[in-house]
Length: 168
Length: 216
Image 1 (tube, one colour):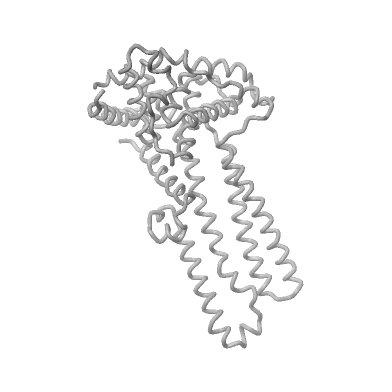
Image 2 (cartoon, rainbow over the protein chains, first blue to last red; image 1 turned 120 degrees about the vertical axis):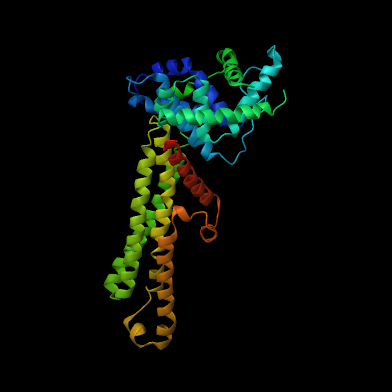
């Protein structure tokens, strides 16, 4: 497909930032098959959008925009499946390979709680946890910085409450 | 559990990512060969299929209208002609939707893209409304001047039926709107199936998007 500019260069960039895909897929999908489908769909849309990528933009900002837009659309299309993230379903290493099983449980719980949020709140929380500054969150989502800050504050409060009510 | 802990848990997965995630980049080759297909594009493909059916139906109506014109019964060709025009108008709206769907920019700010997608979904209401306006013309194509002017039974039955259908379709046209989508009568009318649910969800999502844009 000649219209795509340097797809191999994009592949290398996506490989470098594949953690973004991993976290978004885990936050928006309830099972392994859906996660794989979403990762494939995001990669497809990244490749397709790459020809219009303006290099004046930070690559990760652009990648977050595409990945979140695709994830939200995908999630809304497959909404009938109830969000549920089990420990086994998470695409991290198997629990018996890690020294801290309780950490595994906490990661799974965090994804479960994020999974319970509305699709746009999930996006806000992912960006916050990725330590994106409000200016970049605003650029990715298209809302004002003050709005992003206020809403993140509310979502954090919800998540904290969910953790406080959970026994590990 | 404080804020710091949540951020720490999130960061704790980082160390495992690079070892555990196998990113499927075979898509690069597939896309270059034109083999890769998008699941999100399937919606547009379904719409293309609907457009093909719509074109066939409109062509049939067009032929009936032309044939009716030469047969000389104005009630027939005016009725089929008006039905034809409503169907062509719906087709134009539908084709416009496909064009927008195919040009969706996933690299635009999330709220903007999602708003476009939700509005596109809701525009199905407009197609339904438009098509409902043709209903009374299905009850007029068999009319003749003799029936209208001389047949008492016809005047007592067919004319009032057409009049009621005209009022009913006009009322539906004015009231089938996204803001009424939670009303029971509309749910019942639209059969409240999965397609209707997705319209309602699109409406709710749009409200959510608009709320997110407002300053708090």
